[in-house]
Image 1 (cartoon, rainbow, N blue to C red):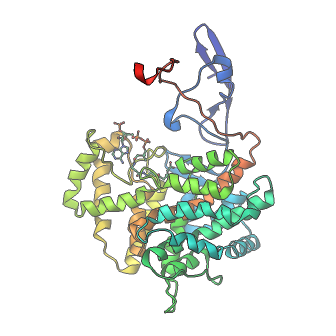
Image 2: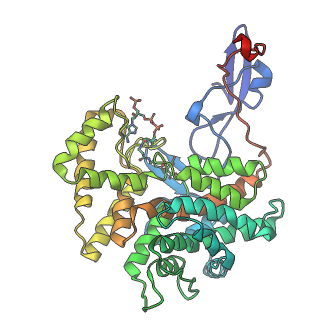
Image 3: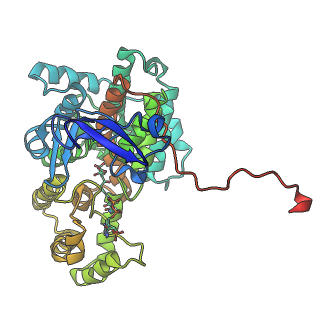
Length: 428
Ligand code: SDX
């Protein structure tokens, strides 16, 4: 590439494409005219070399293990900020003043209740329904209750819908958990913080007083920060693609939840803890490492590897620190945590993992922390979705207001039969 252009030679022709630079990170080659120029498509299943948009929200340097939200390093935000402040930052681009944060938290707090009839949707599910199945359903159903914030061309309606989604996810997540237990739903308590309110809706019962443990509240708030946004990952790309058709924000977030559920993505936290429990004791680790390296075995080491990080996922480092602190505070000695630490040490010294640059990702330790707090594994991805709603909403707003945005419509390399005539059944 010379002075800002990339030249593509195709047969006896050559085509120049503009090189675009961001504020940091890889340049992009603007190939929007390539099909019109060459009558050929680019081919990039999994989008490993494709930038789908311009964004100012989150920057990841996978080789250096760097994650920035609006320029602020994730470890500084996890240690010094709060989930509500990070939500404001992602939505608005700057850290809020004290007054701005107070107003924002007040707005979110007053949207935490859900329409009373939404509770009926839960009653249609079996009690043992996976809470992610419930979340896919009830979040999509929000668009049937909040018609006054589905016009995506109206900035005010977009803002109200954004606040409603961020505010109501904890309420719906807590309801999904309560429903699985057969316990009554607990209404939001506006005297509590965003995360404290979620803990009370999840763990309190009408028959007793409930007091939020500030250390658990702080640990969970940090976990929410670590899961808030992550560039153009699969579920965020799903939300953007759904939103590009003009679908309402509630339906777009339901699509994001569905995608996040996959074990290769947000479902990995549940899968990682189940894997650690299946390993059970450190002496069985070599057996599982061997399986992960065996090409004929579909087994993968859940919580390891990442499309972008070819170094430590900085969120995994922060999560391990939180796990240590919380287990000490709770006086919990979880053998799963010992297996996790031993597995990490063994894997990081194994040539296969070194060669393929497979490091622990955000999902490797999160299950240990969530399990210590008392969440069942089936709730882990629900908590991921709760936190990632902030990123999805911020990315959706950025996409809607991007002048370059149009409906997402990828093409294909066709490998099916060429045209042929219909043959009636008697002649086949
Ligand atoms: C999240 O994109 C995001 O930002 C996602 C996320 C977010 O915040 O939104 O960070 C959240 O989804 C984290 C990732 C959680 N998933 C898991 O922990 C599941 C286990 N990991 C893998 O499934 C895998 O690592 C992926 C899906 C995460 C990434 O896979 P890639 O980038 O598509 O790479 P790949 O599948 O092509 O793997 C490259 C090689 C392969 O070997 P070869 O075919 O080259 O011989 O590495 C191997 C893979 O077999 N490999 C693993 C492995 N992960 C990759 N081998 C064993 N165990 C693993 N975990």
